[in-house]
Image (cartoon, rainbow, N blue to C red):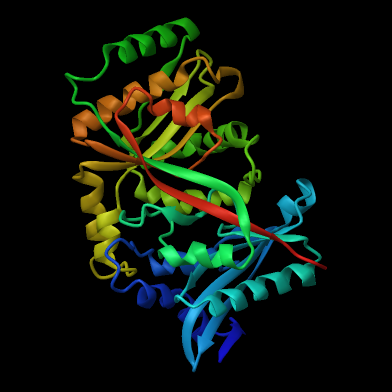
Length: 376
């Protein structure tokens, strides 16, 4: 018999976050998150998204053993400002048993009914800055620190249970040119755009140098992605949370900003050394050797992750990305980075996908969110 239990105590809370380590124990492609950071996502004292959000966590048990988990989330900014009456669901992991998935999703639907929402959608986090999408292609590739891994049967469960595709994200592998092989036209175009609009690049030596520019970066993110589906404006308290969560991982070399003649930011990008192999070694625990593995990944790595890019509205389609890409090309050549993996991009975001046209690239992963209307 399958039993659904809402997480209420510390023991259940711990079981919620440990379950994937058992589910994917023998999966070479699964890259575990850092357990402490996962727990802090759902800690209102640590994650201020709870100023305008709620979450309920559920476990599925069979014969007393945990066989699945799911989180039901509501972002009240999305509901009240964007008028999207939905419950998001995420952290969806289950054994290959359709009844387990059915009961977990029924629990999410129950939250929707109780809160007067009209549909559920997932897997996704609280906002666009969180992980989103269930893997539907690329099961032979490792996930990154900002994506989930899933077994192939998991998305099939959702479809069998009547959920329909809502959004699709795609991810690319990109080969970086050697310095002598990089297209000269990109370098010349970057120089032309810099001179035409009187732009210059900011380079950083320390994390402290970056901090005064963080708010401007998030302002550009809100501008860049506001027209895409599922977008929820990033709130000031969330900026603080993401700054604390991700800034320690980012080496200052990997952040590039472009400013105009008045020192106002018009574009930026955040890339990171790939932490995939380091996280695999850490296996969810930062101590005793986690920091050492992350430190090594930051300093000696031939792979990187393309995390975020933002361009000011008035400068979009004016070639600012060529300046950013030239800076990144030079950085990667200096550091010996030969391969880059992109953050998931919404399939309809053609402007972002066009950025890779001058590089050898391969679409190697797809992930989706699924939706189901709820009868109140």
